[in-house]
Length: 108
Image 1: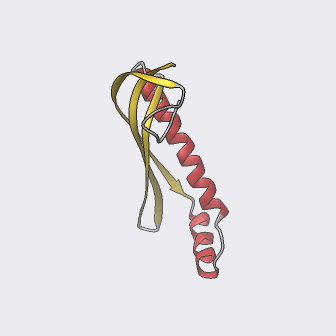
Image 2 (image 1 turned 135 degrees about the horizontal axis):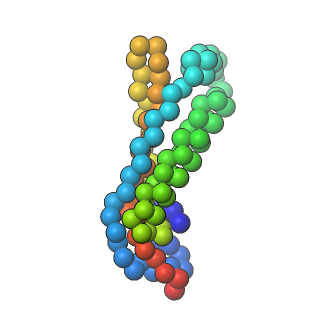
Image 3 (image 1 turned 135 degrees about the vertical axis):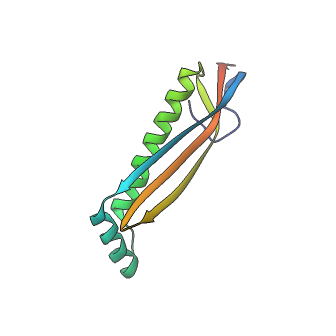
């Protein structure tokens, strides 16, 4: 179970294990970057960038779950997601870090 909250409704934290984090870096396709620039110029939503952000979030949260499970946790609370863009040399990368607290919870 994953939550940005400090608790899970209907569950009690029985053990705080440790802080967990997952870092994901995704290359943005040059064509996506080019069309994003066009979209920025004319306005509107950029579907390819939105999809890349969603895919990055899902992948990073999956890695966070895996790390927590390897520590013996059955939940991660207090999750924070931080997005950044790294660009240079004509290339653009999306950098996402997910952090949280791995815990054991039991049903109340």
